[in-house]
Image (cartoon, rainbow, N blue to C red; front, side, top):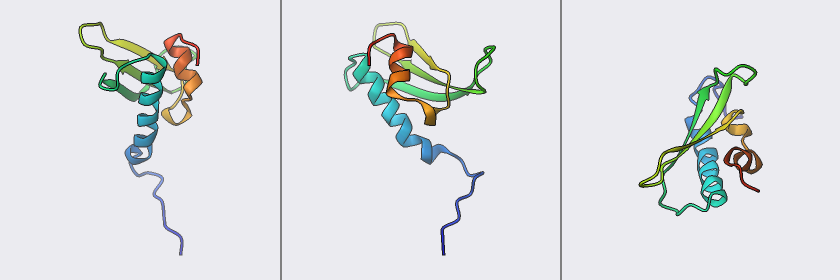
Length: 91
């Protein structure tokens, strides 16, 4: 018997690993210390020509303004190259 996967179940568990990977890419590409808080969220995109969902990355370095990176793709479709492009650095 195969295990039933509910397609309507919350995606949190499936996105947790991807979120951790995006945070690691961001820290590496931006040369951030391991303890620098980085947030990753999937939000509805309201910009014209943008897909329905975008991934927003927040970098919260102490004593600095918050840096917000936007990748116009769902979290599962984010790549290291797309994070590098959003950060304006070479992958």
